[in-house]
Image (cartoon, rainbow, N blue to C red; front, top):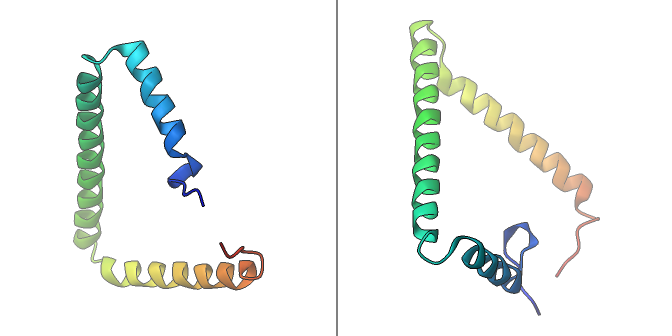
Length: 95
């Protein structure tokens, strides 16, 4: 049985992608590229956290209870997930 990673990429495909990356950029440039991608992802995460904090602060200033809203939204999401599982339960394949 062959197991796949998320996005249905197998180990051989990942190996091929790495081989192409080494051929195109060279072994000495790959750490620099990975470092730059890591910094970019960290900046994106920090920016999203800042936005989330600003929204929370603004809601608190306006007297909006964000915890109850979050709880209500999560409850609705769970209901939708249950409905989808109920509908697709007979369609899913058992591996």
